[in-house]
Image 1 (cartoon, one colour):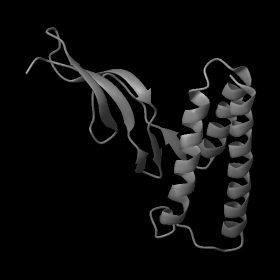
Image 2 (image 1 turned 180 degrees about the horizontal axis):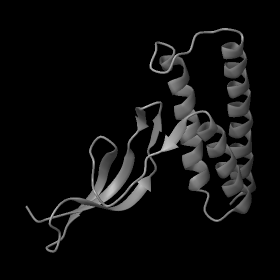
Image 3 (image 1 turned 180 degrees about the vertical axis):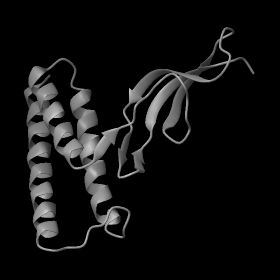
Image 4 (image 1 turned 120 degrees about the vertical axis):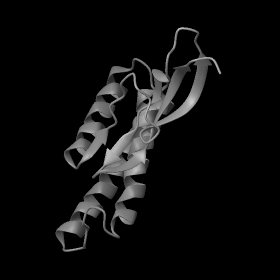
Length: 139
């Protein structure tokens, strides 16, 4: 991974940590936040920014530093209630978005064959569906 790309990831991570600290300070000071309440509109864009950063870190390849930053960043949001959508073989349109599909004579139903991008849930709401490739029976 290039030094420039690592610098960009580090800068994005520092920015997210500052924003998270500001959000935590606002909530600690009594700003209203109830899961599913109107304040969800405030925290959701922040979480989506972190998810995009997680994608960039994941795409960094085998760089050990970038991968450790990604693990730490996910641990931060996991402790605050964000969960990765578990992807099994069964396709579920509530949690999966098809970005690639192919037909297979042996398939009896639509099933997930590959995950391209992880999906995430926060307090029962889907922040982003997992982007998946599926295998389906011929039409």
